Amino acid sequence: MKRPNCLEEQEFRIVMNKKLIVANWKMLPQSLAEAQEILEFTNDYLESLNDLSSADSSGGGREFSLVFCPPFVFIEEVAKIIKMSHLEHEAFLGAQDIATDDKRALTGDISGPMLAKLGIQYVIIGHSERRWKLGESDEVVNKKLKLALKNELIPIVCIGEKIKDKNSSKFLEEQVNKTFKDLTADEVGKCIIAYEPVWAISTNPGAKPDTPVSALESISTIKKVLTNNWPLATNHYLYGGSVNSSNVDGFLKEKEINGILVGGASVNKEEFVKILEMAHSIK
Ligand code: PGA
Image 1 (cartoon, rainbow, N blue to C red):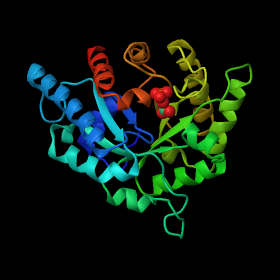
Image 2: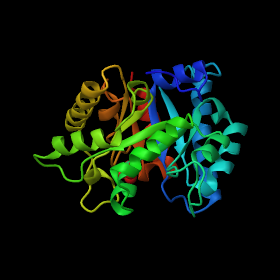
Image 3: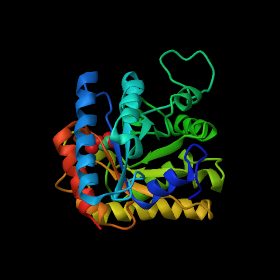
Image 4: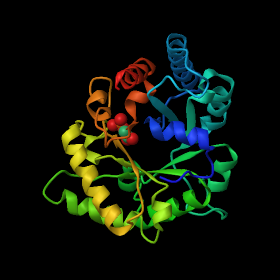
């Protein structure tokens, strides 16, 4: 995977050699004070790890890297907290969405250049809540993906079927082809792919997490489509959908799963730190 320009070589090395834990806060927490609590709790845990491992300032002692994706209204404050705390060397900042244009009258949207200026490094693209609840088409997702890359943000591209059945592989294949349409292999290689089956997302009725074995099968389908069409692209793959401290080790133990995208459990500070503890204990 090529290094996006927004990350220094050292930062990039840290991110890619470790499991990536992306906290997708969605439209939570309800207040900045709660957001601060999550960050402080996480910071305290990381500090305790440092004391134990005498890690260097590059985060050398940990087995994971963090990306916080807060709601837009908290981003600047979260950025400040990260900068002023121990998290500075541990955590990156991500946005949950990006506008379909860099400069245009688009009420309510936030553009790629605005995100980049805030010091954001990552952006979630094509989350299923935007695809299915807000009607974001593959074409819109594709447009957003191109703008994220143009603005040197690292896209975390969500791919996932709505229903698990015999057509799931075909669905994934089509979604991948439309999402990455007209991108070069170089661009595809800059993306992180999050396999997030819609039926596994905790807030959806009857949701239950995928199993690591089944998630790996879907990741392998996605990988096959990507490498067939963009032979030079190598990607990093995350799993997302009802990840919590009881199941996270099953996913992270898999070599082919390079990290997780966590929703609900990432806004519960105790649960989130338990996830980090599990991630840290996996060698
Ligand atoms: P969940 O959400 O962990 O609450 O299932 C994941 C996501 O939607 O990104």
